[in-house]
Image (cartoon, rainbow, N blue to C red; front, side, top):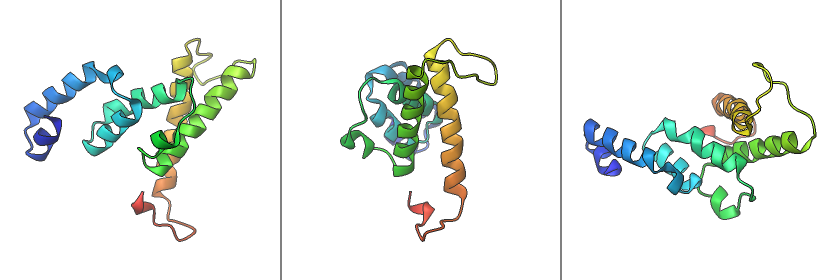
Length: 135
């Protein structure tokens, strides 16, 4: 439904499809969810998918990383590394609004800063001959 409604510009059907899938987001693999969010321009699915990836206990596999654009895979791996360091360092990081007792909020802070960095880098002209538009 989402694919067809997006292609044929059926906004009400698209909204309904997004709402239905949003209620089932936890059932969808987070890397697949990112793929759907990017393909169908559903920005509201990105952060929950990022959070699930950053806070999952298992390492990101090669197969999973290949499902997202390279800069996004790097951003997710950097976020996971920072989240792991914060959790295992034995000290609380200080955030602009104070200490976040909920690890999901700490993950969101890390993700937000990494997404801003990824967006900034993607807007800069390529310095080594790589066309950033190919990402």
